[in-house]
Image (cartoon, rainbow, N blue to C red; front, top):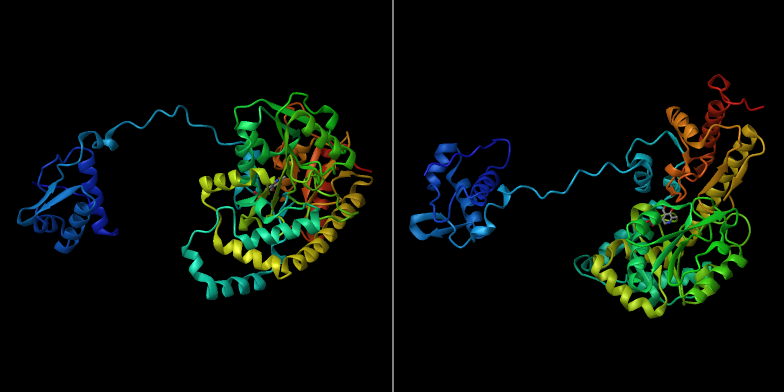
Length: 492
Ligand SMILES: Cc1ncc(COP(=O)(O)O)c(C=O)c1O
């Protein structure tokens, strides 16, 4: 038989011959039992070497599309059931209308405004670390040593809960720095805090009847909660964080909170409210997810013990991440779960992804156990404190008595705009045109369950800008806001 193929001399010929004949078979255009042209004929017809055609035929035979009958040549396989054929000629499933592109806030959650390389030159994007401070020589040395001595682990599976040495190092760090007394057998190493959150929500699926979350909140958490087909109680936040007197009375809830540095407002939940939250969980048979995403950085006053430290492994599921302290590209986070739930959580992690990359985990455990992490944190805290101070000083110099919150810790602060300023989105847009990234809550990786929330707040992440850049960016903001020609109240 004659077989017309369309071959492109620029691409691998064997693969094209294989693909095109396979497609003809799957479409039913080469029926079962039909003989393929002899290799010599097909080769001559398409000016390719006979060997090229033979290799493509052999591969078709190896994958079961054709059978080789000794001297007679190759025939389309008889054993392919009819209903497996013509798959590609069936219409694509009706998936309904194509979903709209996600709003900017969701893209922001991917780590940058717009999720790509189009960042403004001076960007106050939240939670970015100072790339130049990453201890590359140390990291390179650790990785090289591990590859020299332990590379056989690269080809093996390891414990889905995470490498025991990393879990030990995390437990030791948490005890020392956050007052969380946990054994390595309560820890699950995850792909960032985001996976830890998904894991805990899934783990408690059957034990919770409702979900509760602070509002405004972290957009990544709102996405996880809103994806569940469950009632959500949005509990408002004030200057001291979650308003515990507004917690839902219904029982068996699962609540997500950021007590150390509320995201986005930056409030620190005072001890009285922490205790009220724990009491509420006891009284209503509820569970708490404590997201301690940036508590490693505290500039003023001693850190408050984490909720998980007060709870002692009963109702609090603690989530941490190395995204802020070491780097988001590492994708390492963890959940600390009450002992009772650990085996189930470990099984769940196995079901989700069978554990994390060995090399990153192993390098991180060396980094922690050899004391590099503590040194790195001291260095970063110094850098970020100086950057925070520069930002506060620049804002105060340009705008006078600014109302800020969240500046005691973390990597961002929040500026509550005076009533005579334009709204936050307006400033965001105008600043963007001038190469400065500042963010209204809805674009700054935050989500407000109240659609009518006033747009009077800017989120400013200062950790990736140096002092000179911060001053330049604030000067630009000043120009924009004081531009009376545009109808804005001039700043005196
Ligand atoms: C409030 C909050 N929680 C959790 C995370 C988790 O981040 P990752 O998934 O990178 O660990 C972030 C990241 O910015 C965050 O802002």
